[in-house]
Length: 497
Image (cartoon, rainbow, N blue to C red):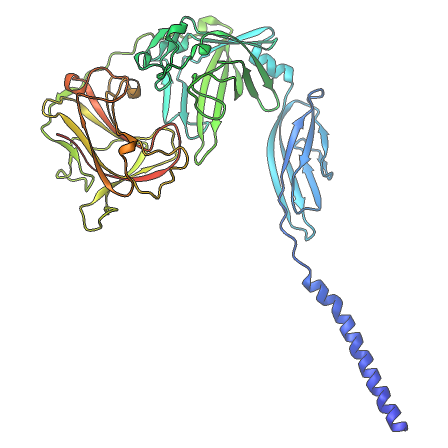
């Protein structure tokens, strides 16, 4: 009996020690199994108090964080989740929010904010009673490009090409009125006004304010509207049908073809010697940002204001060329495949000598790839005025893959353009165009489209290539304009016969 008791005791002791080991092990298992917390994401927005413009209310939108550290850029900090901070001076501050999770991992978000006296900012825009702005007459005054610092796609200078634009006056009144004075003349914007008025300054009367399909555009004429200004964001909103600045077609979220009820944009104003300089920015985010920017001036000393140039400077004419052959197969860059129609600077990407998408064993072709720009053409500018004595038709072979996404703004439009870009860079205001009927377009097969040169289908240009002696520019447009949707197409045998 004594032996059995001893053995039972030993077994119970061992069991007890084993149980303790398991119990001791369990917490460490639980610790090892704890999930690793997600990295924090730091983010915030802010509002400036309308009554106390030095006071900024910060709203924290961070994720996966437990603690926060704010640096307000003026030497002050806070650990609150949603702090309110009052600055001592109106200035620009770099605010940094650092969010930290339970594992001690931190991430930061930085934003530069402008804390400014709304009355000072409003005075810069509208003066003590009113302030009149006109297009800046030095350097470029407006343009469009891929960002707010670039006007590389198109720009305007005070060189006599659009003189009426430089006489227009845009006046902001302290009481909230916004007045546009057209000074009796408007500019015929391509694609917006009736073709007879495109590319020239015309009399600013309601009878002339008509779109290409009869739209009533008279609201864009001179008149009184209203405006709102947010000094925290430098955002200006013009209210009232037809209120605009810059170019009539430039709207809040994209280009428009008829007057709008309101338009919003950002402004920055610099005080310069004798005048103030205002930058107006319309930014359209997309696959690639599109920015329309405009430069305005308000002169305190009118003697400093440059004169408006009324006529373009004389341009030496090109020599004339009467070719017997004019074509590009896009199979290569050799003389056998290219005569006269050599591609020049374009807004599309052309790759010559690629495999035929319909037949790998066929002759090579050209790949026409749209990039992220509003208006895109494959361009050919010659050093001569081309005489068309030996030609009666123009044609192009096009292959449109069904892999392109046509559910949005991208279209199956195809056009051939002939113009003069030597005498004026704004060829789109004077071009002749040959349009393919989209109902005739088929996908995933080659099609040949041929046009009679004496029968342009559209465009504001006068006459036909057969009776013109000043044409030196050619372009192929596929996919439509006014949007930045990309697409890939194939072309061959662009030729005149």
